[in-house]
Image (cartoon, rainbow, N blue to C red; front, top):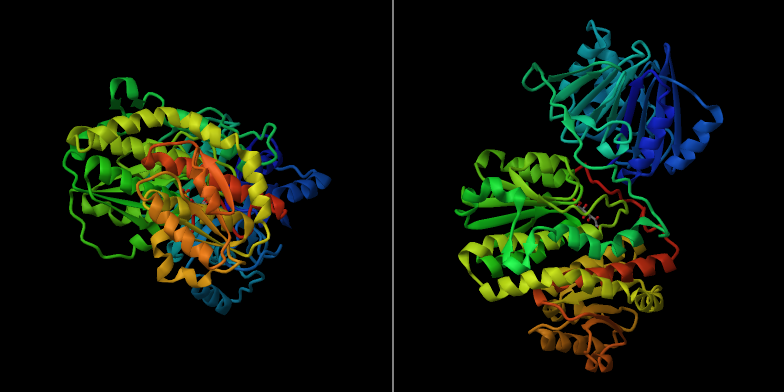
Length: 611
Ligand code: F6R
């Protein structure tokens, strides 16, 4: 949440920073701003709304400076106003700060600074930072000392960039639990929340670690770790992926493009890994921990949102194939639990962005437990990818739309590969092992077949676009699909939607059902199909409209429900991939029919870097 970009060099950095902000807009899009330091003068441009508005505004004036930093905001403290947009400045307008994260003790610091004569113009937590630096600058010899003193006072999570009109050649940056990467150029250096904003300019990067404070000029980067209280030798890494600049092509938006990438996503996630011809699964990312994996007797999955629902699919897969007990926890809840944890437990974090604050906090919580920490991550080089002991990348490519689509497909694919990997040795379920491997290879074509029915799904979606509420139901493997289907619908169409285990309907939710409350039933072939039918009957008996996903060839379901979306016959355990493709399209077409911006739903951001 919130994107940061910075430039110092011999050229004017305005264009680079604005382009970078556009690349980072998925992190927040309430408002945006830039600060330019030219000579001893600071100029700030801020706008409410999209980065494109800021670009328009800035291009009228064509300001130039060799030190520029920018920010795209996802509001936490204070409404969406120009006043609250970043950069924030000190009272004397000589120090400018952009910040991602939350300063938890800002009220206390603000009160203290008020007694020192400072005043505050915004409602942000961020505004205390430039003023606190200013306060310390009156007592300490250098800006760096004042910056560090201010950092020592703040509590919370942050990535911060601070600049001063007195030092037009230097960017000061700090990180604690919120990502920040430095790009190394020739006679120029860059800063960004993630490499996508700078990789057009350089592939050489330094990922800042927690408590790092960096001083960056055009020719030098020095890093001091506040916790260790010493200068550290920053490790320069080479970005090992091509400019994965996601381009829209002929698609109207990224969400539709990413939904349609499902077949390619499965293929990439299984390439060289799921080898049906040899009846084996090879996961290079787990090779370094093979010995440890032999001794595990429990897996705890932690994740948020869609990644959590993928985890629920993984729970069934791993338990069935490997016979290892699995628990799935919402990362935001897990970190406050005081549960027993033995060394033979594995913590498996699932995250598309690799930057989700709650998931990072869950991993940090077990840091000293001596347990193996694994990751299923999409964003290469992200915090979670770097802090886990080993893991398997999703390789789904950049996911730009806020609603997660292809990442879910990749996560379930990878989870099934991990289940196969863990199940291979125990030979817990050889029949399922073989069937699952075969299905993984056939799945891209089946996902494509669902996509080929997009026009039919669109017709059904348009019929239901004006309802206020929706219930999604499913049993066993289809239960996580119901939860994920409901999440997708509510986040982009703003229709109230709930996912429920079909068997739970009679324990409460059935009370809500009437003609104005439709149900989306996931009723594909499975040993439990008849039980789901009974639940659908109970809904129909109360006048509730029903849309169902059913397996191709199931004609009888037409007599039971109002509308049917068919998916190809597939192994029960992997059907959630096909359910997801269908429910993603359903949610997408409803949101489009209601006239919403599906790539940037209100109140949300792609990478949730605050708790
Ligand atoms: C839903 C969605 C979110 C994310 C969640 C976790 O469509 O995008 O629920 O799944 O914020 O994000 P990651 O996977 O990046 O940790």
